[in-house]
Length: 311
Ligand code: UDP
Image 1 (tube, rainbow, N blue to C red):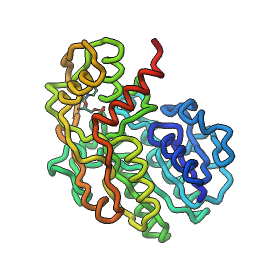
Image 2 (cartoon, rainbow, N blue to C red; image 1 turned 30 degrees about the vertical axis):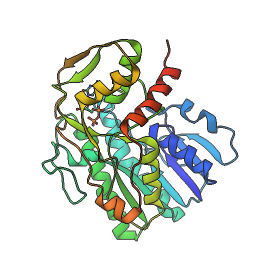
Image 3 (cartoon, helix red, strand yellow; image 1 turned 90 degrees about the vertical axis):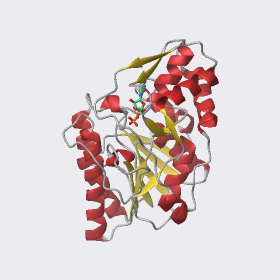
Image 4 (cartoon, protein in one colour; image 1 turned 180 degrees about the horizontal axis):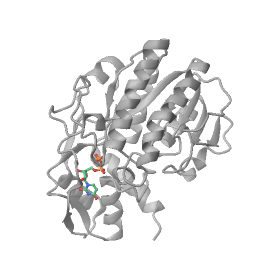
């Protein structure tokens, strides 16, 4: 198959490109490198079934088609980006998604959108099934991302209904692994880089808030199971083992053998209190489930940061 992977130089995108090329597919990776990094796809450069195009999906898409599938992973996704890249996020989630949908329609390609657990906002239902409509603050600091992703889902369903386009919507839950941006401000990258540098580990609030972390290879396998299925979704793709943030900090200290202390810092505005996917739909329709325990995925992530962080 021939894939266009938008946002292919990011954490999930680069793992997806690697997996697709490895299984024999042809991949065009498109990225504007705002949060992605060329070095994430360095090892694929020169491969006969891989090419890289530096471009922004908010501009017209000048890529030679056709494609069997278009995977849209293009969007800054870290809360620290929601302030400085607010307008870019709103553009990429609306104009960018529409440009890719139009191109997909021309190519008769299946379109997969990376939506997000953030559509559930501060969830009042726990764990979160896809049937839950969410509890999002429409004017808060996270709204640029949450509402752009919610708009994206509406836009994609409109194309699906109007043009009978084959579309897939995945709601991705906190994903981590090798090639995370060390400075992306996320809990795993912060804690691991802090532990390795011998600096204090920052826990926001009292650390009792929860997240459920999915290893990047499991995430890619789930997304591809969705592309290869005939399920429109939305489908939650994540790991349903839930941790408090404080327990993750303790686990990182244990796995790195770091002597760093844990320090407590203020909790960001509208930081969700709890998050865990209900995976019933994914497991029953895709035959997929995550298999990497947090400790195992963290070890691989720690090893990667250990090799790649500047000393
Ligand atoms: N967090 C933390 N310390 C950090 C970074 C994040 O305690 O150095 C917390 C954050 O407040 C949130 C959770 O970890 O409750 C996950 O944050 P992240 O930015 O990784 O992802 P989110 O799920 O909020 O998008």
